[in-house]
Length: 58
Image 1 (cartoon, rainbow, N blue to C red):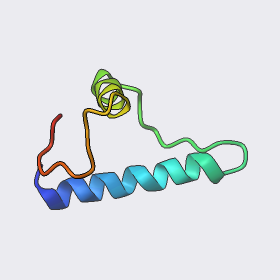
Image 2 (tube, rainbow, N blue to C red):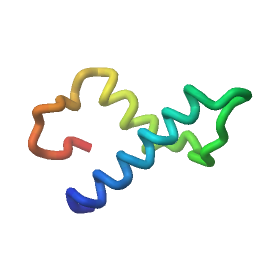
Image 3 (cartoon, rainbow, N blue to C red):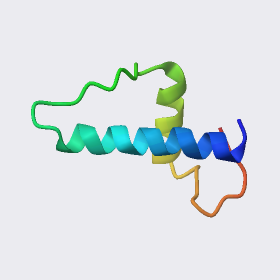
Image 4 (tube, rainbow, N blue to C red):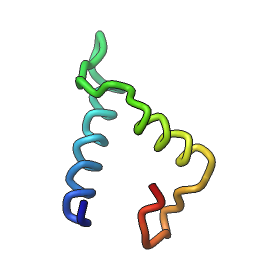
């Protein structure tokens, strides 16, 4: 994916997260918890992904 594509996907996921946090009764986004997402979550939680990084570490 290129930079623009990554930003669009990230924007979509941020909006889904906002809806999960604010919609009364819950929000269903349809995102299955895949192994790929699990890996991303673990890498972010471990501090591997830094905001100032210029490259994608995933």
